[in-house]
Image 1 (cartoon, helix red, strand yellow):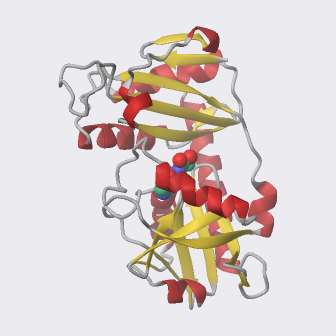
Image 2 (tube, rainbow, N blue to C red):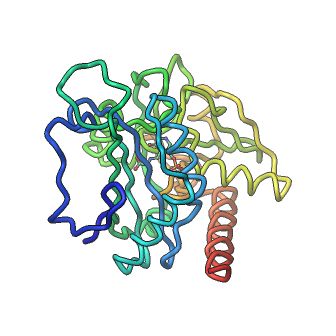
Length: 286
Ligand code: PDD
């Protein structure tokens, strides 16, 4: 496997991380996950824009232009002859003696590498189970931080319960999933938490809302309660790796006919069409 380390594409075996890298010690950094369809990274510009925003929010100054980084990532995809799968990208603040405070002059460390393709088709067709958990994360969930300790704790809880995702509840309100955004459909209207400091503004979420706007489909960006979740007609989650994923059971309670509902199906289809047309138009431009 070839990896991009700072500005160089090298073999994975040659890639080295210093034991005093702040990403390694403190989780002091930010990351992204991008999906690759037929060799084309989907919504790459949007992911890179979010990476730069997250970096800026934690005071990491990036000197490279986003376009230059995009070009290097395209080279990485080629170097690995990737067709389907993903890219993981990470920026840490840099290497220094272990102190909590940091020197502004540290050189950020960048790494990107391919993630293998994992089919989610069966899960998308049949729907998945979720559990609910208290949202005990910090109040800057809009930053895609490397600090995922609580997210992994509740994902593990879901996994041990045989579920796909943990749906997080803060003060009775459904915020998002441990690694996804959560949507409900009630009486034909889609609803999801507004993009603020309590959730990560997902690229898949944004893309779906764009599709909703284009089609004139109704939605509300308003917080909703756990009771609304449990009484919804349909529930689904979105993320880069899951796309539009129906949820058919929450905390052991099955929804309607225990199968993905008609609105969720419609959004899945529309999302796949958007992926197809965007990756096709990128190929044509290349
Ligand atoms: N997770 N909320 C959280 C907390 C997330 O970690 C993610 C993504 C999302 C969905 O964002 P997007 O649609 O941009 O993927 C929402 C990624 C996939 C991960 O950590 O692997």
